[in-house]
Image (cartoon, rainbow, N blue to C red):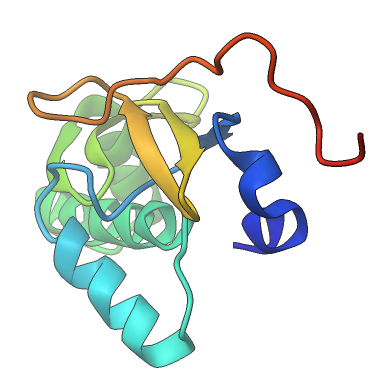
Length: 136
């Protein structure tokens, strides 16, 4: 929100990357976003990432059936973790995670998710020609 607060309507149409949105169709996303907003009084593009990683941690422990480090690591590297707040997450052999990327567009003070594409999702709006900045 700091970006919008600093630029106001000049932020309209700006595209931005990010990690997560409560508007994503992933399980628990709406509720997590609502709880975060109620507790901290602001919106987050990160909390779903942190929560999704925690979800994969617990799922990997269940898959490994133990807290043994080697077995846990093997469970992380050989499974896909479905149904997290980040969508489906899979880890590469080097241990880095792969989850769906995200893109947003600022519109009326809100980051609207434009990617990943989902039915009924926000459609990118192109800035009309001839827009002048507010300094002129």
